[in-house]
Length: 134
Image 1 (cartoon, rainbow, N blue to C red):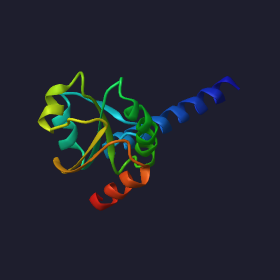
Image 2 (tube, rainbow, N blue to C red; image 1 turned 90 degrees about the horizontal axis):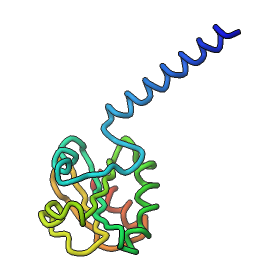
Image 3 (tube, rainbow, N blue to C red; image 1 turned 180 degrees about the horizontal axis):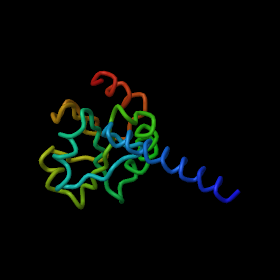
């Protein structure tokens, strides 16, 4: 009985490892990833489509849009990578992309900025922009 349980455990561990390996090969996560001044360029270059949420802890509209970004990261996993850039801690990147109001969503395709949305907008508006990029 114990040997059978061990076989099942090993099989499940192998399945999980394969699933995680496939997910990482796609280059997309099912939740937003943190991007910083150091990781920003690599993130937008290594992934075909990236949406970066520029935010700050003190920003009410940023907190309002956060659940939408979380849900979309899961729903678009494998197609779009969602990143979160904390503008107070990464002002160099925020300045580079002229982020003067938050939340700001930056849309990248093949490493190039292809659009932005400023403000806490409905999910439909974000999806509409993503569909034009896909």
